[in-house]
Length: 139
Image 1 (cartoon, rainbow, N blue to C red):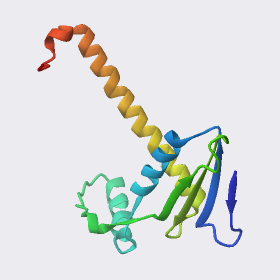
Image 2: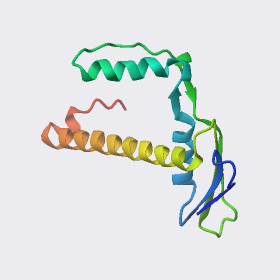
Image 3: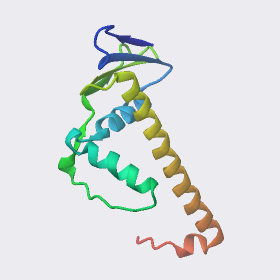
């Protein structure tokens, strides 16, 4: 459920039922990682897309100063320990809070897929390899 302003879509509070610190803290982390290309550089990236469509490839190097955060504030609270509900507050630099939260959840899904894939590869390597004898464990 979204609790927000009808006039300003860049600020909203979202209530997630049947969730706790596990998901809320992970979403808070990904929200804090949300970055967007600085508006001054946006025409260059549009130009890059047009040139790439014609078959030419141009590399543009980005520095951390070229990226600005999409989120100005995010935090979560659990109203009461016996209530399985999390409130996540999102304030953005102008993008709709719902869109930024959605992008953040998609980023979190990609992170989880990567962790799962890496874990599955390690398990497969362990099972097909020498097992514990291949591990370098110092006692």
